[in-house]
Length: 425
Image 1 (tube, rainbow, N blue to C red):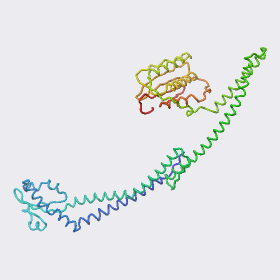
Image 2: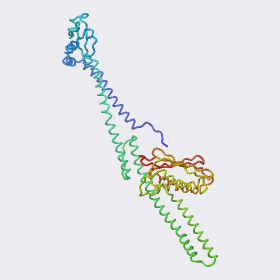
Image 3: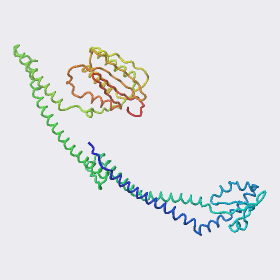
């Protein structure tokens, strides 16, 4: 059970670093926007530099008006020149309504239009320069934020990368590689957990090695116990084969041989109870999977199995198999899978209920489904060998098996890969 813990220390550290970076970035932007930018725009150097570069804006507007033959009203409404010169605010006034001497004192210049005159005087477009300054201050703040946060992130990524390399070494089989992790946050705890897991695996491997030795000793003991009655059984049979005199002695040797056979069966049952077949124990075949016609192969195998079921007293109609598809698998493995499945049906299925078989084709796989009802009564003769063997055989060809049980209803679905499918189902 996982205990609910407090806030993440690693998250708090990252949050603190991010807050520090954000505070520095906001402070830098406030300094640039609130002090540096206004001081720059009000400085004599800025105004002198601006007039040195854009002081002839009125003359340029005069050429614009003359080239287009604009009237006074058209010049007052014109926005083309202003869009072409966003750094300049050009103020246009009718000289009839203003003191021309005052306008000329502010740098105004007479603009000759097609039907009259205007006075124009250029000023720096402070809105434009303010916007540009704010954009630059935003970029500077972003650079400041990442300049503070990036080193911490780099250190964090290096720690994660080091743990990943340690895991790769351990996954490669070098369990003697020690994982060193310092600190008090979650990454440090993860490193210590990996180290504890490494030590636990080494301990488990040592215990498994000892268990293998114990099993070996047990096998030796059972083999010895099994060989003793086997030797006597061979002797009794040899006597019976060559003749043993009267009928009474013959019956006695037969009884003794039967007793030894029962003893051997008990010893073999005990051996089965101690040593169960695991899926990993199924040997890998040397032959590669082959591509076969799905309907033909399934039709042949299912027909044989359905015939055996019918002969054993079950109702097992042969399913309708349609379509044209090819399967990519080991046919011997599939035959063994069906042998195990249908053997289980003969052992556990209720003969009074029909066994329903279906074959359905999907995009990249084929499903073979067996549905039956489990018979009543004790079923304690299973050793748990069949199903693990079936799963291992299917996995070797990229297939799998699903089992569903609802009450006495039992449904087994075997998924078989079609030829050319990219992934196993």
